Image 1 (cartoon, one colour):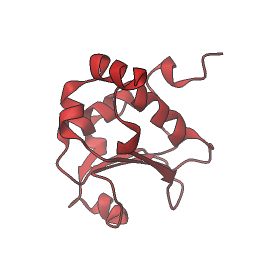
Image 2 (cartoon, helix red, strand yellow):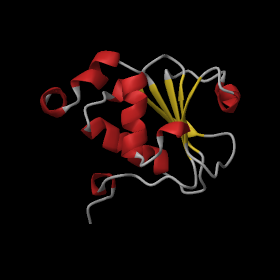
Image 3 (cartoon, helix red, strand yellow):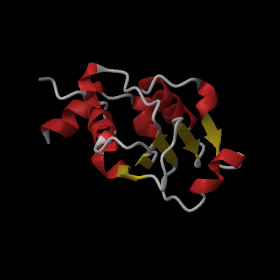
Image 4 (tube, helix red, strand yellow):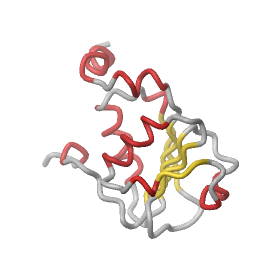
Length: 126
């Protein structure tokens, strides 16, 4: 309950209103990267039930965000948190998105080798 309350108070209302199902895919050889980003997103107010975490089918050199459900605001915030330029956000109709046609999420975040999580909040804090 406390975590839910904190997320409601401190979370981004527009992200919560879009209710995007965010699928995080680790496209790197660094184990646990998608889980780290998921932890960060939960702290930003995205409910755990709206996050899916897994590994991409292959290794990607560039991170990519596929907006399959018209959740533009959330996609832009995800790009901001990953320090990605806006041209890394593509629509489901984009040829780059073809590999993710069978994905479940409204937004697919593929963490590539260039992924730089934007905040120290993602790190373990040791």
